[in-house]
Image (cartoon, rainbow, N blue to C red; front, side, top):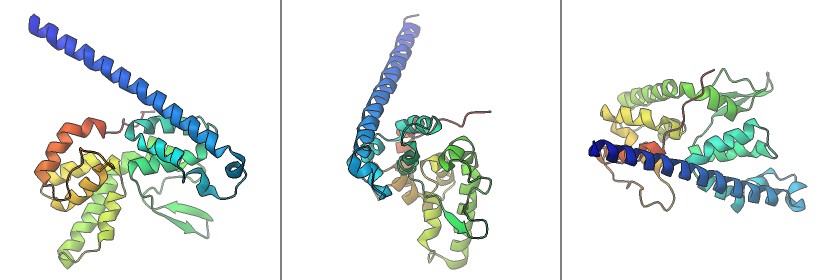
Length: 234
């Protein structure tokens, strides 16, 4: 009975801490978001045709530095079409460490998203990716791994790093698939895992020389902070 009571108290305390943490991140996010809005509404930025002034500034970087917990909050701002929300996808992509490959089709007069052929340019890509596109992360990851492994088999170690960059470009959402692949002995993914989980000035960062066993240990200790909420079912 006493043991059950201790476990119950531990569970309740964990729930309270989680709620407090979420409330804090909401407050911190809204503060930085309002600071950023105040900056870009200044006449010298608001009236400027230089688009990068809206994102290349300390206030926008402070939003990004809040990290993964604010991604759902950014998505909500974009969905609600909040003021100046058209700039927020840049923060989402930066936090998730994604690289989105596109090519411009002159005949169709639109950008083609190479890994997401079902995307309609009439939509907001980040909203499409959040609701639908990331369901394909596993298959895209497996495709790029197969291409890389085939290139290594054909050319040995003399393989372009661009192929690994394709995998890395899938961003933080690919981490669970990277871990599972590494468990199968595919150690070429270790540098990708380390790069994606490295946070500036964090004491938790893995070393460049970390082994796959150290990566697995790190993942078990920290994975709850690195997993995105699943796409909502429709």
